[in-house]
Image (cartoon, rainbow, N blue to C red; front, side, top):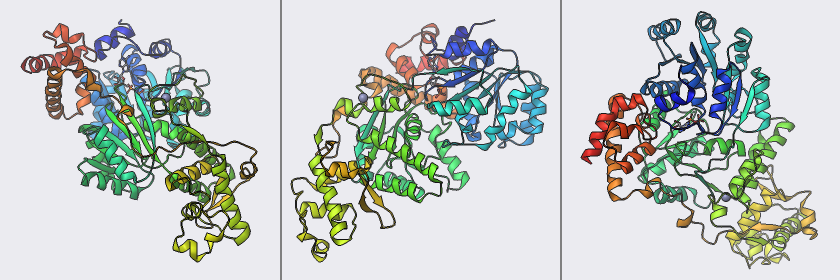
Length: 602
Ligand code: ADP
Ligand code: ZN
């Protein structure tokens, strides 16, 4: 019998295991259960695919998204692995054929949606087959507090009751301890070996910029740093999705919308195009992304503030699974804080829900306003400590902080005076006008130019004042009254600032919201010389052709990293080619000659 390492090298074409892959595989080989927390792109699939090939019988993989099973199975078949799926997209004849192959012991892996798995028919079928292991992918879907809850997942503990001796592995990229405990409890994995990897994604460059004209900012970010790349843009609402996708398309970026309100067929079509074509930008609500294994997503952009750090990390984690440089970009402003607080305030949840949502928002705001390393903050949220990373905006261009105590006192006393002396409340714009001494018609009409705070803030620009207010809101020193149409109010904690009991350090706003070259993610092709670049482009064209013939996404044939190495090393023989990362026996056999020809011709 082969060893796991031999399978890794021969079938997958990789030299060595990453992180805890080997230990996880050994646990399953020995018949034990495993609960695996690994970041997106960490290499979770190999943890069950290799035991599936080594253990007698078929591995049953529970996966929540039927639209993506086909791609997973295609990718395995390209590697020469015998895999199939059972889901509602098939007609009964196809399904019968898969069932027959399962019963005949011809399958190494079978992907099944949870609702299908739990039917009597499917359970009976499994009872008549030999099962190598159960893999439960996206296991955080069992968590009722999470953002991806799937009620069907709750039924999966039945697997353990019915097949107590079959090893099970549950996998997720969701990192918090509470989720992990919940998964263990609900899936009866109390005795499983827990494997918690580092959640760091060193190849992702994190950047959070101040929002002013967000669509224009997004467009220049894409044009200047990721022209022609695949990417995902997350928006909070359906209308924002439509609007942003249309704007990008009008400006020459190939972009498609995706949200739950769209016709299901069109949505599926957009997803399929995103996976298959290169250089498409998907503009989506958070309904999009789980289970999308596209490895060459080069950026994830947020044009609205995410609701929690956990959600943000999941979404940004979809960038750069192939390990090449990628960017997580977000634009955030005063209005985002107001809007999110409003959504919590107006939500139908009970007080506990609102408190939890409020805490999640506070953590997210803390990340946005930090003057320290973003990655350090992110990982600290998941209980992991690291040194400053050198690959986030605050590391690359440390923001200045300044003593904003006096400025904060000016804002707070303006809000306080308006309320105490006039019984009035106003929103941010008007307060800033008063502070800056702008005698707008509204200011004059209300007689606010006679207030003692009128003009006391002329030393700061409007931009700077918005920054102060945003940070006060983020820190809970000011709050918003939604019954009063988003007007500003003081809070319990405002008093200590007004009285000068605390010093308030604020993040200085960049003078011109924009970017500098030093903050960009380096292009992965940067170390190719002109000849190698040309060869690389020729190889990509060759790959596009092959992918079209096979009806699979290009990355299923070879990853960019593999083609880049081919371009660099110029292999002349099949032997030399087989040395290259990502070239396993099956792909060597299927594409080796044709690829060498392409290298020779270029
Ligand atoms: P996850 O499911 O954890 O997001 P995947 O299983 O999709 O991650 O793996 C991410 C990428 O890393 C894939 O392209 C995979 O082929 C690659 N990969 C996984 N393990 C290894 C390894 N040991 N060596 C090299 N590449 C690997
Ligand atoms: Zn950093």
